[in-house]
Length: 446
Image 1 (cartoon, rainbow, N blue to C red):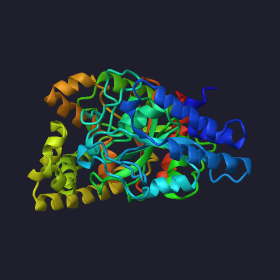
Image 2: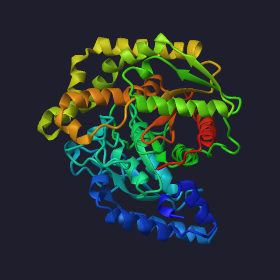
Image 3: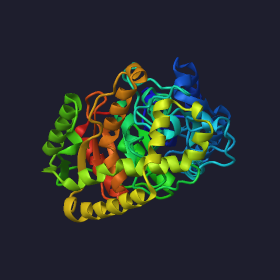
């Protein structure tokens, strides 16, 4: 077996069985990352001293049969907007150049306490504000399936580090799709928990009312284990998970507007396989979704600009123009309009629960309605960048607006994912549903 491309849980069980040594595996990952020709485009920085120290401690615990978790000794990467104490954390922005936090983010500290190894920090879009994954200010990672294509963002380096076998899994963040888009475009599983399910302390904010950290990995089980560690709770029970007897809702209408043939065909193929595995599929269209989506310009950019306005306007020349313009778009929304938009969104959330999703185990949509575009074209054509970015994040943003947990799974068609959205606060149930769907699709990961 190529252990560098084994799932995190496979590695954890191999460490438990004495088949895999955390020190050897960590050294193998560090060597692979250092030797990869695009390493500098994927990792903002490796943390070899920390990784080796944590691996030695994990090795000792394994020998003494006192491991702290299934993933004790497993080495993963962290998006560079998640604080790591004593290590530069810049969130992909020159506005934060040289920033060194004193302490680990809460979620990283919890992972360390459960024995996980921190390999390093991965590149991202500037301040995490784009779904395409391009960042000419620091670095743009290559798409793992085709280096000429956009990697997806904003957790671009996170996804690529896993897909290329440079980390067992990765932790990213998701404000409008930033975990699920790069997971889908790089052939991985990505999980966005319910808003508020994980502590946000130590994660550089974009829009706090939507921000949430989440894992990118090779299996739903990996994501479930990582989520449990970051949430400081026991892992969900996924044994025997199946879609047989589940009620799944396909959300028609808006998720297909402007969609390309490839993602739609891949999605339909995946839905057909879920139906054959025993799931009951119902197609639903609702205008409540359109009302929620129409609020996006009044919610995301105003909060993001409100958080970052002082730093941005003190040195706007340090930012890439398309991202700068996106932030500044928030200045055009008045305070009363922002408050009114939130009032409307809360009504839509209540209607969604009462009138749309009652009785369904999950809601299905194509993760991204388009294939990953050519990265160079996006760099050269600002209008195309704006168009592609909005369309890329359109379907994933549904879960952020409604505060829902969501999982993207590979469909077996390159760069095409299927997303399952659950009920707010019912993350563990969604992960079990996703595990059943994963078994029915049986396509593996990159």
